[in-house]
Picture 1 (spheres, one colour):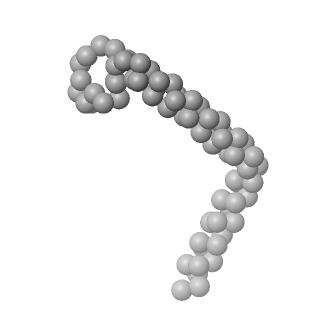
Picture 2 (cartoon, helix red, strand yellow):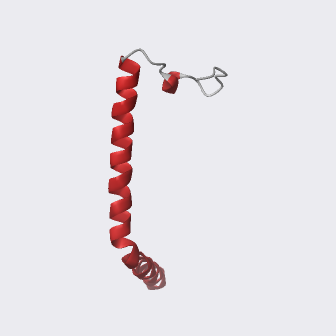
Length: 66
């Protein structure tokens, strides 16, 4: 049974060593993605409230041009 836990521990030690150099870049990526997503959401809401087409409510097989 110990071999399973030692194997899992070795796997996680390897993952953490690989992830260590990525550390701050991952944080920066997620923060930037959050800002871009928030600004897109606010733009889209303003667009729809001004009478624009709500293209996100179209079904996946919709053939309408936007």
